[in-house]
Length: 116
Image (tube, rainbow, N blue to C red; front, side, top):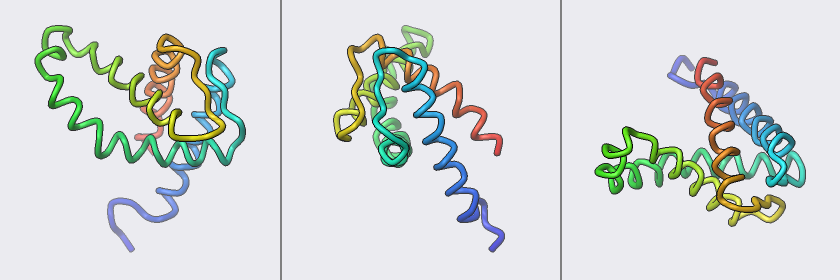
């Protein structure tokens, strides 16, 4: 199979994203990730929300994104991070500011994953 992504690459990216989520939970004091299994589930849900929900939110908030020169995307990332955490037992985010910093750090970490 010589498609854009092999199954191995997808699983590797999923595992690396899960490790990034664990790292964010370790580094940001207001974010708690129970274990690696929880991070794996969160990685899957974050990938799906970024694929399906985020584009819709970006389109709906286009005027405010233009006014803020794109910085409102950081707010959307934090809200999606909080949304995913609310769906999963074992992840706790204490407040929007922790979600903001966690989502920002996770975004920076996952930029490197796109290069794999």
